[in-house]
Image (cartoon, each protein chain N blue to C red):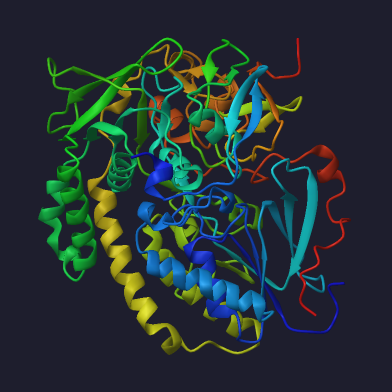
Length: 478
Length: 99
């Protein structure tokens, strides 16, 4: 094992747009590719599919750019059939280990299946991290009530399970994701009582430079606007949800208008009855695996650093897609393509020719600029913490309140998020601070820093004790 | 229009699962969370500290808010675990390991 002769092996973590584009770019170039992914089917979050047993004959009703997905899916099937790619679904990677002197320097440690107790190890000569991102939600009174879900969560349940949680929804927060969530829920028969966006998208118009040449993105936005009008979804910009009401489940939300400084305008409160609140304040990259490998991560947690070839600063480790910074599916495809080409060439001992990916590089440059502009416009209200009452739970896992965080700073002298965590247990629960990280930093008035997590998900102690002794997953390639 | 109609879904035959002993109908391929949502249930655990109700939050396996007891195994993420015929789902109190 490991030292057997044969083709160099590239293991890709993640089967979303970036991982699939990378796999297709590297496959057939003379390397073996293994794609390790936590979902049961490829596609990632953007192309999340209904389970096959649900028999969806028209899943594209819930999707954008279906043809791109068909190309990726068909390409993956062809490469798997040709023996160039092995796809390992339902494999939940908790750590990537690097031993530079081993015959194959990387071991990808995964847990198999939904129980996540059976270990699997995949050895590789190089790894490509395409682990994507997840949603950021800032707290407000009532945000822990059943019926309050992340915007992406509502979309995932709709795309993957073909279910909605109720009849009347409010979609709120900030960012472009709110548009497909609102239109998707409306198409699925939910009454979307309001789309509440705290930013003012008109600010985009003042930054037209980066929008030039992005006619596709402008058309996409206009398409959503038409769809919202057609479905009579009321859009409130420069508004925010300040409270969710209910005892054991959501019954209504209070929405207010914001002034130019992002402060609540007194007297503008309105109560909107709803049984679902889909809320999100932007996205965060998954950087855990990269951090464990020692890769440079932007200090604010904005993503894994990568060079023009999508190489991280650790030899043998590439990164592509939202793990390097949030920028959507099209950017992920471009980065994945470049990373796959680069990794294949480097593994075969030659310097890649950037001419091979000139078009992807051009697209990457434009899209990064475009998302830079979006990031500057779609920011949460500057004074959001003023609406977070002391008894609001901030850390959902450990039930730590905003009052406890403020006490840790004000009375106990905590000056950074790590000290706040040690004093309050905020971020010490199941999710390891993924949900509360930005909220704790904001309420504490501390800088947001990269959370250092040795493992990307909980690992049974027995698995940890036997790590490195597990038989390698057969990759099915002779 | 509902989501199944929107995607023109023709699921396999429905089967029965239970939630706290009560029969619910579920579709093959659904996660525990999807089956419960389809049955109108949005909370299926209580928190360890305050005993507050919780259900789905992130929907993609990151937040662990949707923990539930499935066939006597506590702390399963309802958004990841698929239902199977005869599954006994129970509302998880606190840690799910009894008191």
